[in-house]
Image (cartoon, rainbow, N blue to C red; front, side, top):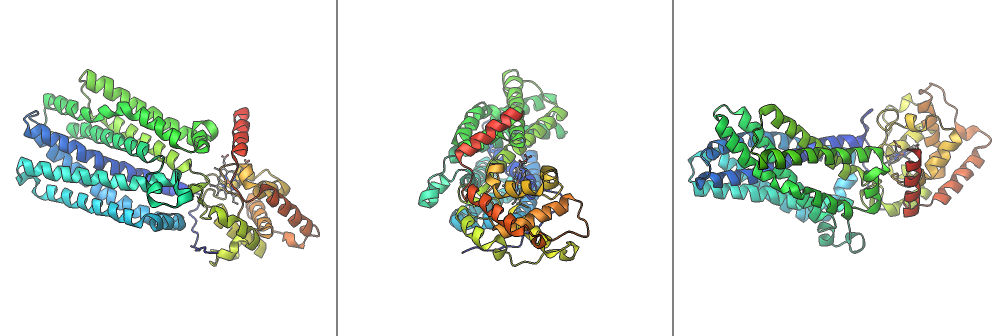
Length: 480
Ligand code: HEC
């Protein structure tokens, strides 16, 4: 088995998926601001040098300072933090992404470097350059920033819709996957919108513009929001490029996913409505507080969108290939025989706080198979979800994990490691007492294992089927 075992870290009551998701939102928002900002500055430079706006140049120079400050500082910090958390939380996923796409990733970095160099050159020399040179530099900056989106977008969208890659393992069919174009279009529009809203804030912050100048600049900036009219189109296209089960999760099948989806849609519509009606048609003025509220809404829309993208992949991080708990689809069968602890050579942290060796084993199984999506009793906590279940219910529902909830992967270990997990769960649900019986010492132990094995066999090693997902969704609707 070509499994690479990485140590599994835990982060207390916070779900690991949330850490990377939460950080990702800041990073994506910042990156999109930088991309849209590049396009906006090109537009304002053109307005200035063709005499279409008297204030465009002064505005451009101060906007640029905010953009650089925000995107170079927050972007750099969150970017490094993304790599750091990715290797902490899901080393295998990020490892596979790099393995598969290393040259494309290198290409992305090249454009990113170009973006930084162009940005720095403009920061340093922009005020002294001729219009022509300024324009060239800004175009270089904008193209480089957008191209880095182009490359990263292929890699990220591949995680959700690997498309033909699943069969062919062809790099380009993975890159230009079914959600590549809708996602690129959607993100480009989002970038332009964020940049335009940020411009409305900057206009209000700067003291050098009088009311008339502000009105004009805001009106010009709002032009960048015009493409938001196409956003529903790209949104729907994206939704239809998604696998059917993921689409259903976000359209009612999972409460949390649906909530984030609605948040994204609602915030985008508010912004879109304001952009089209308020700014474009009627040349409305927008003051600092309202501009800030709109930026916050854009942030909420980004947050909703990113959570949907990350969450709707469940139970995969790379669809039809790698499960969220870093086990591939075709490794499950052999792990059923060997047990998952065969690939975990690392000691347990605070091993002495557990009441016996069986519970220690259970804690290790939990950290390998469940801790990526659950905490013991924090967010998505198992004590809340399974606290009232009997040991038998726990055994059965865990053995049939992918049927218990279709967004969980199949259980990837043996019967004699499932039982310790059930014991660990019982111990945690009981408030972690000092003493806990070892179930191997009970007379019915052999029968218990046999029963678990039968359930495991019944559930099989494949992910939930379409029919099982349909059934789960129907059940969910009934319960509502
Ligand atoms: C890919 C992420 C993921 C993994 C891995 C995962 N779960 Fe879950 N699990 C979920 C989600 C999401 C829910 C639904 C929570 C809800 O309904 O609020 C859930 C629900 C549950 C429930 C409650 C089911 C019900 O019918 O109410 C239990 C029990 C559970 N998981 C146990 C486990 C155990 C044990 C493991 C490890 C062997 C595990 N899960 C692995 C995501 C995951």
